[in-house]
Length: 126
Image (cartoon, rainbow, N blue to C red; front, top):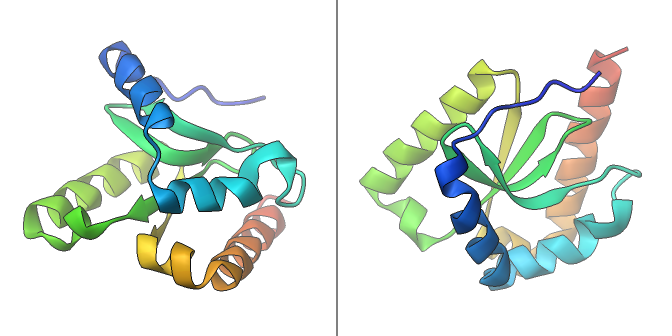
């Protein structure tokens, strides 16, 4: 049975806006995640979880994928990312980060890393 992760309903509309204003790296990665292309798992974009919006989320794997742009280079952005990751992990989710540059310049490496993460999750849940 799926564990439902609650979210703040006030961020639902923002999540919808973000889906309609995706970054280039989000659009590129989505081309490989949509339609259960990655080992048959369904990912969704801009998913509200707790008081945050995850860039990509897979219910079955309890996996959050975050793409970090230049704003994440600043201390305030990094502190926010650390807090977000901690709170998501506290409810049993795994969070994986990639930079926008990784996605744009090395999509094969990103996908290979994601496959390894998925295999690790599958093996640990047996």
